[in-house]
Image (tube, rainbow, N blue to C red; front, side):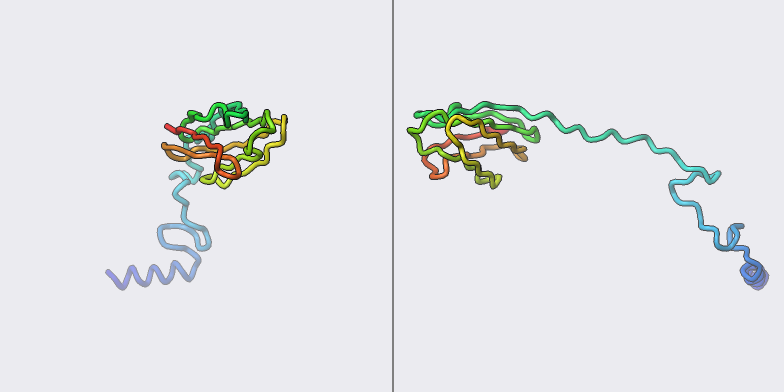
Length: 139
């Protein structure tokens, strides 16, 4: 019996018939093809929705950053629009060390910086000298 199967297999290969009834050179159906050779339709995946950024206006005054504590949600973009309102401050720039962000703050001109908090906790920001500080509380 084994010899018969072997001989038939050899004869099939010689005449261009592949095992399992497929002609030689015809690839096996892929896992995404149905039994009839047609494509199997998988349910469409929804595109990942990017949340809209929450915008917080921050002023730099003689008292420092106002507000100095900002609340945010993990994974939701946060846009800080910072405006320096006085020359009587050392906060001529803002630095967010954890996110490697730094922006100069020209007098009277709003400056925008956006970040996406990745984990719950506290993110610190400060002036370039580190004397005027604030926090972002992420939950």
